[in-house]
Image (cartoon, rainbow over all chains, first blue to last red; front, side, top):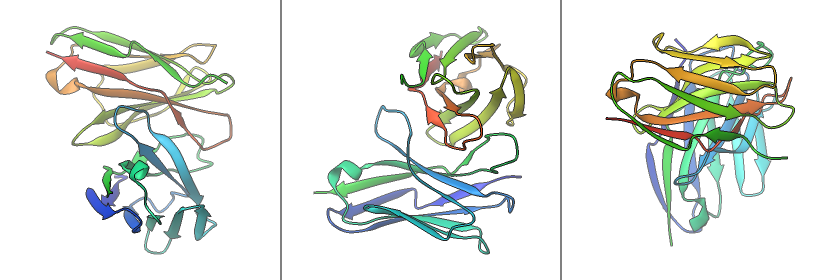
Length: 114
Length: 112
């Protein structure tokens, strides 16, 4: 069935260092890959997304890369700050399929140490 | 625009009871999806509604059901509650033809 694996489950970095979170999806028809940030007690918030016709997308300190052949995509956060501490979820979806079903990874708890 | 709202925010029920959760999407959004979030399983897709029709359903038992009204508001119902149904239930809405989903704050359900 459809599945998204996410690693690592927890990640601790020093402030100013980079953080990388990796996801692998199983459904080769997936073509839309959003990333969500969920702070403690708050709702998930979309932080960046990428579509399968693009290999990389960047927004200030965050970037996402996609390797369709390997069915693999990653979130990169540079110059991490304490406010980046949260749980990050990747997801995969089929855009244009007529449904908005997301398959989520199990999340990565990122801790940025001051 | 006001964001996605969910009511109630917290709920405590006992095993065997049923519960109804409500979700009001962002104005103009016609798609509403529901997810169950638990510490061990992350976010799992329950179902998605568009224009009052269920378009997709996740791998949950028939005790979980939902509906959408003509104003796009959605409800989900869980019957014969089990301890394992304790979770945060999130709904998300999307504009027509746009992939991004916007989440509500969730309803925290505790089954005792």
